[in-house]
Every structure is written in C-alpha cells, then in structure tokens.
Length: 176
Picture 1 (tube, rainbow, N blue to C red):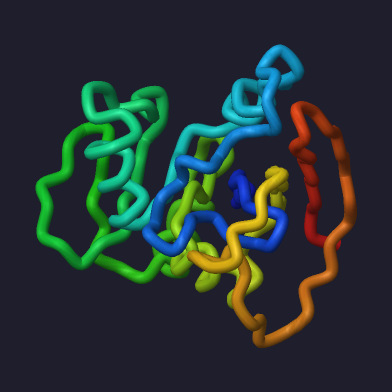
Picture 2 (cartoon, helix red, strand yellow):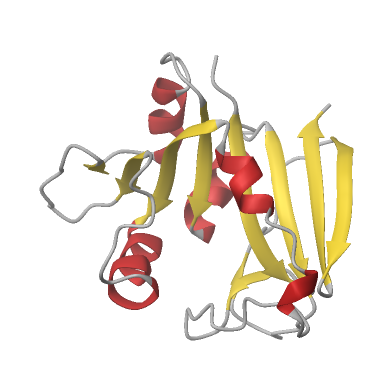
C-alpha cells in the first residue's frame, strides 16, 4: 500500500500562506549556500501528487506559469470546477479522503499531499497521513491559512529526523 506523505513548509506560527494566500515569504534567513535540498531526496519515493484548486492555480498563474513543475508525477487536483484532464494532470471532483483511499491501493511509489490547507485538514481529520515532512520557516505571519486547525482527535507521532539550515528546520514525523 502506498504511503501518504505531507511535504510542506509553514511559518513559525503555523501558517502555510499569508492572509492574501501568498507564499512569497517562503525562504530562509538569508544565505542560500546554507540550504539543503530536501525536496530532491523526498520526491525519489513519490509518483503521485495531490493538491487543491487554489494550490494548482497559484502554481500555473504565479509560481511557474511557463512550465508544469510536477511533470515527473501524476497530479490530481481536487476541485469542483469542470476542467479537462490531461495525461499528467487529473481534475478530480471528489472528496480528497475518498481519492486518497482509492489511490493508496494502486501499485507504485508513495503519494505527496502538496496542499492546500483544506485538503490537508480533511486528511488529518481522517488520520490518513502516514508521514509529515514539515519545514518551519523563520517567519511569524500572524494570520493566513493555518496548516492545522482544531483536530477532532489526538494523533500521536514519532520524530524520525530533524535538520536545520538557513534558519529553517525540517521536522519529519511518522504515525505511531
């Protein structure tokens, strides 16, 4: 069975986007020479990406309008908007919980939950995330889109690894 992995960055106070939905603040404290490429290592074990409409729209209009940055993966965009799927990008008008349950049964590598907050919170509520890769950035936003809202139950995790670079800290947890 495929593992469901959350790989995301958040501010020190727990936000994944600012109050305008922007992620321009996603950087360390300065010197990029002190950066570790955790992304390249993470995606070696991934073949599927799941994201919501807002995350998809932000990628194709702001962050990378000229190139689909997840071309090496099968991408599922959870949306109620009627869109035509391609051979790499599938627009899914279904619950992220049901989509994840269905996809985790397929053969292949693991699944990456890329965003956004609403999808993540639904999956956390159903305790479907197997591994949490969270990078904490040296920024306090004060408001915005929270990574975790009030949970309906406790989820116990096991710390697997930490590392710090450029003022950021990677925290990797698995369910126990």
